[in-house]
Picture 1: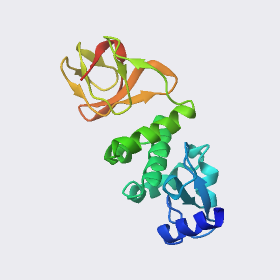
Picture 2 (picture 1 turned 120 degrees about the vertical axis):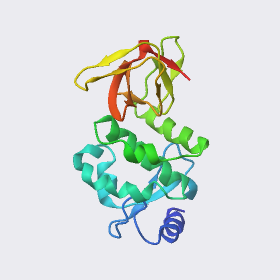
Picture 3 (picture 1 turned 30 degrees about the vertical axis):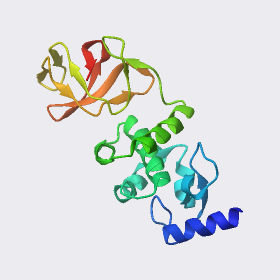
Picture 4 (picture 1 turned 45 degrees about the vertical axis):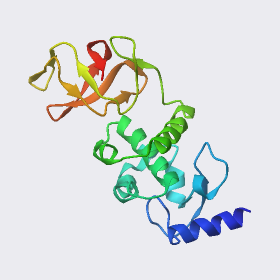
Length: 190
């Protein structure tokens, strides 16, 4: 069965790592939660596989995801999303994550994989509404932004928010083109 699955993935990928395009050291990787099918598996090189647990170890390797995020394969999209989320939470630019569009079912699958890895926590806005990665919020009070020289005005919409690792009281979002941290007590989900 595994040989058959590997053959399917090698044909689908053109004998290349589905994340970085390498042609050496390829093997099957199950994108959890998985039923073991080709639709929930990808072909990875040894380098990508070694970096999955700690993507920041060689963050420059992940520039390959510029192309990967456009893959038509849901398993590849889910894996790219998970990696981008991990490196973005460590301060790497979020531009690629902002460009990535996932079908809602693929996004749900990708998020479940992150939850199992312990990266998700409950983050709530000023009304107690649950906030999720990618939501849009509005600022409910003028907030001076330290070090940036501007005030985030009441009523400003912040789109595609990011969660802050291990801090349910803050989110990250772009205001006036600058990525800033915002206290959730001053936000309302749209």
